[in-house]
Length: 101
Image 1 (cartoon, rainbow, N blue to C red):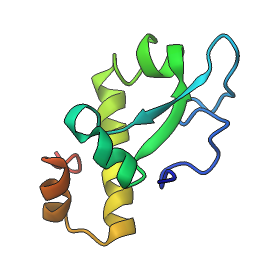
Image 2: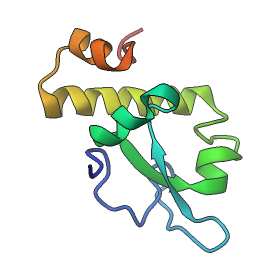
Image 3: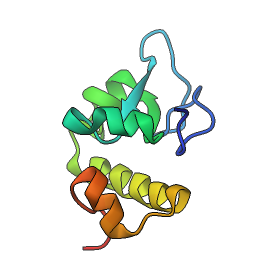
Image 4: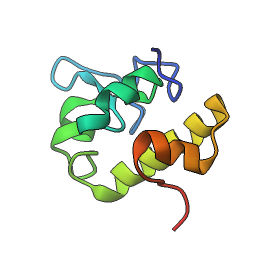
């Protein structure tokens, strides 16, 4: 499914820059691991720079817990709005809530 978070997949969702041959854009599943397929199914994916924003940078989602949590929160809010879910219904699908606290 197409991303419900990002319309322009030629720009990085995190920093807004274009992908380059040195740092191309990856499709990042916001909820990964065992929840990766659900992220894809519900459109909870974004395109981000492979090095700087995805894997290795100081603020990369796989390095910086605050950036990862903020992205998960935005994805949860978007999913709840798009699919008409309550917070509990989101938890039923993705195991926990990222809004609040």
